[in-house]
Structures are given as structure tokens and as C-alpha cells.
Image 1: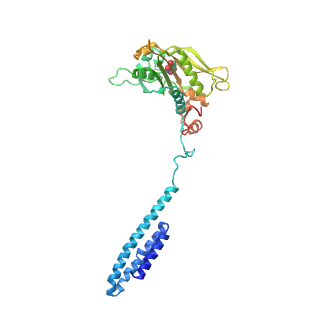
Image 2 (image 1 turned 90 degrees about the horizontal axis):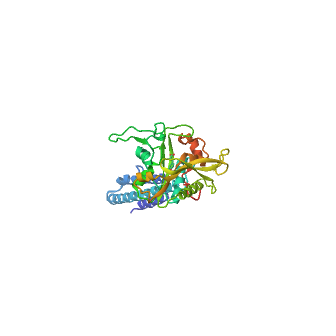
Image 3 (image 1 turned 180 degrees about the vertical axis):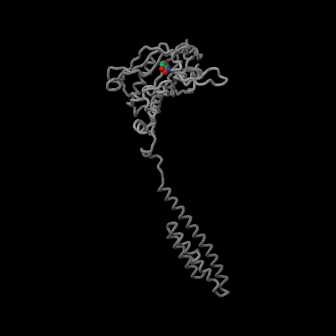
Length: 356
Ligand code: DAH
């Protein structure tokens, strides 16, 4: 190869090695292959060479052009790849880092309370059960031994839904989660140990009542279950939930159609200060009782062989007490300032050892 071509080749190689980014590389490329590039210039001058030299020089120039084109392209790719790698490094997102708190979402206190309740009962061997919000009157009332003319069945209390064609029984928005007891016993043989948190509905709306609210049902069916088990289980739950190992718990005789005996469960608190576990006052937090033999037989469970207890609690009430929330309606107003204040970080889920 003629020496000027050799020079052009080595010059170009050096310039390519020095080019560190696309702009510098492009200067080299244009300087060699562009319209006024060096190689283009040499090709143009070819005509001025004597005829006998022209053929050989032409071939050399074409070879050089192919060679340099390849080298320039290869270096271009290299620079592009380096730039991509640098960008990937610079823009790397560490997904293990917590999100900036101002932008992250928070867990609603109702969801958090359900999670806490579930965690505690899970540790006691309870399973989660579910039922539909739109429930048959049979599951919501009749199977639970609630008489035809019980006040809970009136329209002041219950949302009735228009009849569904081909279905003569009118449906209701479930007024309690207790229907899940029925569904569970029909689906599964004892022994049973479930809780069923979920939405419930009643035609009621004031500072302490919302037409939609949440309950958590519990049901235990086994051999030789006694009132002692019920008391032990609920005392344990309440003390862990409120994080007060000596929380006073009181069982007060009451009436529910689906339990016999029935009771309401109170915890000790001070009406004046609102402090839980201290003071001379009592606050009702749960309904409970031994499952009525008629409820068992409605579900085909032999009450001579199996017994059990059930309980139901209002989730809003527990969440309000534990977190110092004054007005029930604030749960559903979607006020972001309220949610930021009472919400929980999604990165610290409820566990038995931390947070409560
Ligand atoms: N379902 C009742 C209510 O809404 C609460 C309740 C009381 C549930 C006693 C029970 C129970 O399972 O045994 O007021």
C-alpha cells in the first residue's frame, strides 16, 4: 500500500482509539469517509494518476475504504455500548431501598387492624374464611336461629335487595359476618377454627354508625370445647391486640339468637382519659357465646358429638380504640391528611413481635 494510504490508516486508527463519545467518533468518521473526508479526497484525486498506476491505487483505495468503514463502524458500536452501560449504571434503581416517604402509599387503619387480628388468630391456629357481601336471608338470619319477626330483620336495620329472577328468596347486604359460620360448617367437617373478617351493612348513619362497616367473626368447633376455651381465647386475643398483658376483660351475660349462653365482652378503660387498661370503666368490644345446638343442627353438625364457641367484633371500634381515632365517619372520608396521620407503612407489616 502506498505510504499516504498507510498513514491515513494509522492516523484513523489512532483517532478512533482516542474518540471517547459519539460526537468525537463522528468527527473521525466524517473526517475520513464524509464528502470532504480524507479518503473521499484521495478517491477523487485518482483521475489525476497515470493510467498504469490508477488501477492498482484504485483497488488499494477501495480495500482501504472497506477496511476503514468496518473499523469505524465497530468503534461506533463500542462507544454506543459503553454509553449504554454508563447510563444503566447511572440510572440504576435499587429496588431494595424504601420509597421516598412523601410519595409512598400507606395502609388504611382498617386494613391494618384486620391484618393485626388475623396475625394473632393465625398464631392460635385459626384459618381465614370468607363469605359474600350479598347474602341470602337464610344464611344471614334463619340458619343463625333468628326468628322471622326479629327486630334485626326490619328494613330500619337491613338493606334488602330487589329479588333475583328465578329466586324466590330476597337477598340482603349481610348485616353481620355470622353467616360465614353457616357457610363454613356446611362446607367443611369439624374440627373447625376460622375467623372471617369482612364488610357488613346496616341502615344506620351517625357519628358512631356507618352504613358500611367491618366485622370479624370467629368460630371454633371441636370435641369437648367449653366456655373456658372461649374465655381463654378471647382474653389472650384482647391482651395481645391492645399490647397490655394485664388488660382487664369482663364477660357479661347477654343474648344472641345463635349462641347459648351468650355474652358481651368488655375491656377495662378510663372514660375520662380514654386510656385502655387503666380506670374504673368498662367498654364493650365483642359479642360471643357457645354455638346454639339449633345452629349446629341447621348445618348438619351433630351437637352430641361437637361443640364450639363463636364471637364477633366490630373492626372500626377496635381500630378507633387502639389508634385514638375519635370519629367513625373519618375512616371513609378519604381525607389524605387523615390517612397520612393514621396510615401505616406498607413496609412494616403486623407481626406478633413488633408494633403491637
Ligand atoms: N353478629 C353479632 C352482631 O353483629 C356479633 C356476634 C355475637 C357474633 C355473638 C357472634 C357471637 O359470633 O357469638 O352483633
